[in-house]
Image (cartoon, rainbow, N blue to C red):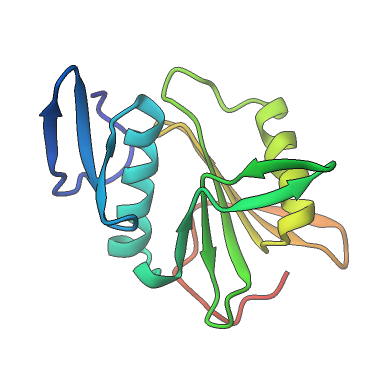
Length: 152
């Protein structure tokens, strides 16, 4: 797998038939190691090990409704009351983070309501603080350390 612009972690990868599988600490099982999954696993470990997000408050592929269609988020970090705190959209490293990707994530976040939004392909990372009341976004230099009291 490609070297990413995220801290390395102690990953457990095994071969199963034609597939490589990676141990997912959140789902507690092996999952197929796709390029997007490689990015997602790096982000999960970065949030837990470097930004102090509690593992029990991270939710992968959480379902939500958008325009009467069922969608899934890549990763959502919750606050201590179970409300969305950080919405993460992961792309494979070959997919650039464009304005269209940002618009897709921001649109999803209108129904999710997380005050933090992270877009990453493992090489480029863009993080914003979203203020829903003032309808503003502030680009951040990095993902903030876990703060369960953060409001949008």
